[in-house]
Length: 333
Length: 289
Image (cartoon, rainbow over all chains, first blue to last red; front, side, top):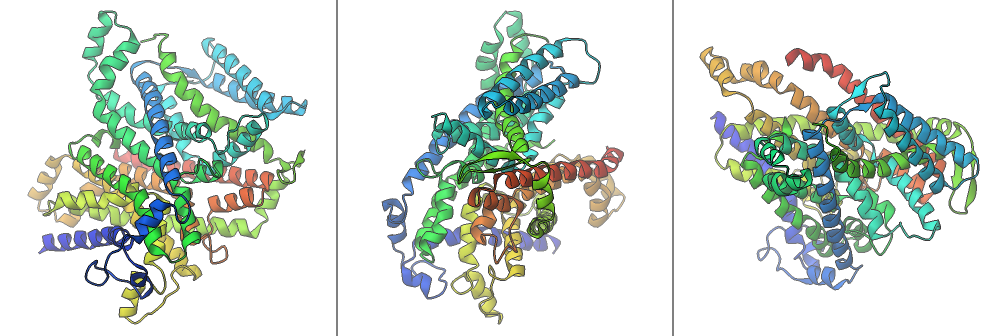
């Protein structure tokens, strides 16, 4: 009796979850009357499917969809690949090496960086050179300071990892808006950063790096050290150990991390909205425009939405399979 | 192990994150003390805390803050309760468990923009299926997206639809990591399932629960794309959220100093909230551990 109650609850939620998805995939095949005469639910029974919606979307009738689709695919895979590589390296370093950062050196970095920047702009320097000089100097000074036996607390690997993940706490509008202003500044010097492949990809790499570090740290922690130690004894260089032994062993984790981050970038809206305007517009931006462009031409709107969600549904199915084999359990603890 | 090569491993990631978070942060902090316009370009002028005082005396800011808080708190509470309940249900060995698990996850990785677009159709007050359902029980043509209260509820509904899977996923993993021996002992003592839940499951999963709710709250406060498509912040500004407000001020009105002050206030609020949340929960978490 109790079991059937539980089963019933699950079925209700299943219906709630799946109905909107079902709705998109039937609506994209609806002819106009099946939309305008009130909702219809069953293809072939209360409406006869048509391919108008798909043709409009792919033919670029109302705004080109193929270009944003291509942009999204290119930017998402590039950014995710770079972030997965660099993030894995950082995560590996945090697991296998020991880092000590003096709080004092960190404070020094902030004070010299911000103070120097304000001083230089006050002296009439442009934003970018002032910032580069101030923070370059701050970085060198603080690295040197870190080597000295200075008083104050010393931060370890866990703190560095926490620093990475805490970046995700920032409201993205802070960095998105400031990046927009910086990109405008960069644009003044003749390099186009707004609405460019590099500009958007670069900020996405930074956007997902913390997630990669956080996830991969767990996977590396669960790898056996014995193989690496054996290789070290044989004087195999660290880089080779990492690329030829560690990465292949962590392959399931790498794939899962890659897929999760791919999803993040594919769906990202705010940065794309602010940092692109035309040529490098991504899919979510093109889709959000459908609303005003099409009104109640739901076959086209549903088609556009379907293009965005279908790859992610496949990805979810793959991830769910990987999770069942107990792969993601570590990430929870 | 102290090998010099470790720097090669960690610095690329650190530098990129520094570049993209720290530089903009310092830049926008600087601008938040200035008046600055892009169109027409006027040179920046130092105005001290004027932008901040303007912001805090602006009625719209407080209303937007209230909207965001209401939407986030209510939707996260619902996500947690429903998500935990469904995770418990999935954990109870029901038939078809595999199908349920995969299907439940689908909404989570979908683009919020696309999700909002879908729900806009579903909630259409004359042509949508939700209206069909309400008409059947005698409430025709409800203004789901154009009445200020119903628009808020609609956004909450969409948030719950999309993010409850996240809670299910993590709570289920948590449930699976619990030792079975405690439950066997509890059964020997004739503890009812209700007692088992409040006596064992809930306290053991409290740290995980705290983390899940924290992540959802932080992520929830960033909400923008769902609202942007679903209601556009309307009717009026009754569903406008902080991020959407900042976007409107910054990239529609190009009020740069003011927007920077706004986004900094947002950042400070998030940091304060996070610290407070952890401080309140810490004694409870340590006691259980």
